[in-house]
Image (cartoon, rainbow, N blue to C red; front, side, top):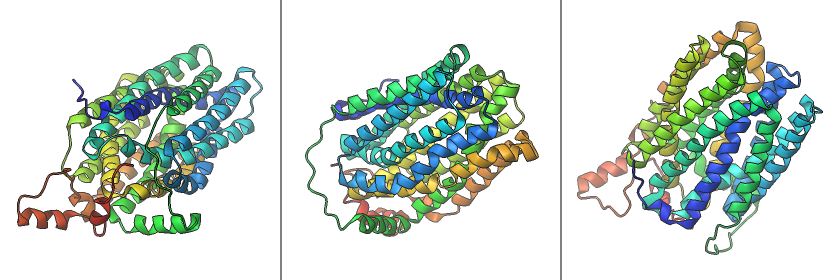
Length: 434
C-alpha cells in the first residue's frame, strides 16, 4: 500500500515515528524478557504479577503530575527525561540478571523506577503528536505512528523470543535499555516554535480544572471506566497468565514470542487499514473493535495450538488498532490542545487504575480456580463491558469532524449539533496544534 505523504512531510513527525519504532522494538523485547527473567531467578507466577504491578503503581501515582508537566513544559523534553530514567533502570536490571545476582525485590524496585518515568511520559506523548502535524493530517498521523510501533513490535517480539530462548532474559532487558537511550537522544532533534508562557494558578488548580473538563464529557469517562475493568482483566491474563500458559503448555518463550509477533502483524495490518479507513462514527466502530480482545483470552483458555493462538492474536491486533486510532483521533478532535495532556493523564490513570490489582491477583486466582477458568471468565467480562459501553448515546453518535468542510444545509447542522457531546463541541473547535 502506498502511504500518503501528508503527515510524513513534517520533520518532527518523522522523528516521532523513528522514536516510536526504536522504543517499540525494545518494549516488545522486554515484554517477553521481563516475565522470564523473574521465572529464571526462581520467581513464581505470582512474582511475575508483583513485578508488573510494581511498575504500574508509581505510574498511576505520577500520571496526574505528568499531565500538568505535559501541558506546562515542552512535551518532547519531558519525554526525553522520562526515557533517560527508564534507560538507566532497565540497564541496571539487565546487569543484575546477566551477572546472576538479581533478586525479585531488586527487580520490583527497578520496575517501580521505570513506572515513575512512564507516569510522566504517557501524558506528554498523548499531547505531542498533534503538535507535529496539522489537524487534517492527524488521523493519518495516528495510523502511521501506530503502524510504525507495531511493525517494530513484530520484530521485537520475535527477537525477544529468540534472544530469551538462546541467550537468556538479561540480554532482552539490555536491548530495551539501549532503545530508551536512543529514543531520548533522537527526541533532542525535535524543534517546535516557542510557546507562550502557560498561565498557572498552581498544580492543584490545574488538576481541578482538568477533572471538571474530564467529567463534562460522558463519552470520555464512560470508555475510561470500561477500560478500568478491561485493563485489570487483560493485564492479569495476558501479562501474567499468558507467559505461564506458554511456559507450561505451549513450548516456552519462543512460542510466546511468536504469539506476540502475530499480534504485531495484526496490529500493523490494522494500522494500515486505518490510514485510509476513517469511519464517520469513530467511537462506535472503535468500541465494537475493543470487544474483540476476548478472542485471545478464549484461545489461551483452551489452549488452542500455537498456530491457532497466533491467528487469534493477529485478529485481536487488527481490532486493537481500529480502536486505538479512532480513540486518540477522537481525543485530539474533541479536547483543546492546552488540556490534552491533563485529560490524557485522567484517561490513563482511570484506564490503568485496577491493572496492578489484575496482575497481583491473577496468579492466586489461577491457583484457586485454574488458569483456563480465569482466562475464560476474563473473556466473558470483556464482552459484557463492550455491550455496556455501547448503551451510551454519545459513544454511538459522536462523529468525525471534517476540517474546513462546512455543512451544506441547516438540517445537517442540526444533526451535527444533536450528535455532539454536550459541552465538548465549542471547546474542541478552539484546539489547534502548538
